[in-house]
Image (cartoon, rainbow, N blue to C red; front, side, top):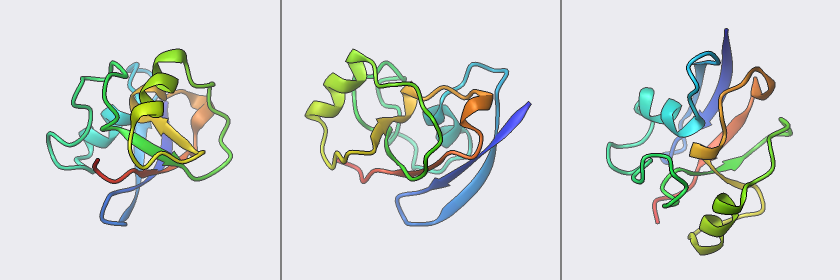
Length: 108
């Protein structure tokens, strides 16, 4: 089953994309799949919560799992962090996040 995500890229363009829930993907991988950020500017650590290149801002009230310790630690060191910041690599594509709207944070 696919869900819909709305992703605003770093140029301010909004994209509504389909994301499969059966492939164990995360938001960062969807951004890369649809090439919504230049190669080498997102997911630099490969999705290990070791960089903040996939930081995004959650724009709506879709329920997400709480940040884990690794995500909290990385966001505490990142630039441009807001109250609604999350690491895209830590938001897994599940049916529960259908309709999620995010904006990619500026490059650090």
